[in-house]
Length: 280
Image (tube, rainbow, N blue to C red; front, side):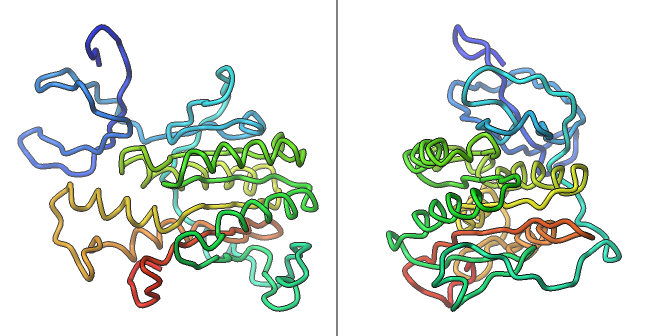
């Protein structure tokens, strides 16, 4: 798409078929400068991201484009929309996941291959705790880590990168960012992009993976914005009617398969400290 004097690529994901060869699509980049009647190319393909060792030590956007340094040579890409592992492949045994933080390991021990939620209001330290966990756990873990920055501050993402470089774990981590200045379509899909990279390490390379998501509430919030743009009828407190379905599609893929796991730590913002809010 040519915008002014510059040629740039704007990726759109089709969300609704309206009939009469019309579709309603969600933009994954800012739409400034777009005019009616511009030509759009139908690729017929889902959004896909690079997977494998080439993703380590790199920062990506939702489309798998490198944000730090030069572009990488991609030998394999996976679509971000995938089915969860079948029931017969799931691992049911319980194993303690040591964090190295004594208060957590004693009072609220974590399960390997489980999902851990850090609930709290604004400014109570969820992101700081996630950063501390990345340093402690990723260093001791020795395996691969994937971080998804969903709708949070760009400054925090920058701080995280510098801390990981100092801790020596950056080269073993893939980071995917869709920060708060991005369109809602990006913030809704960025967690799926990061999860797809983590699934490759689990399913193909047979590794135990750490998946950090900050913040899962922003994923819900982006779904609300997209749902409103699509004209859907809102449900309780104005949230999207398919809130549980959207969350389930993400969470069902974060699981342990036979012998290998994705252990997920997720920061969860509680709006107005109201634990009865549907989102948390």
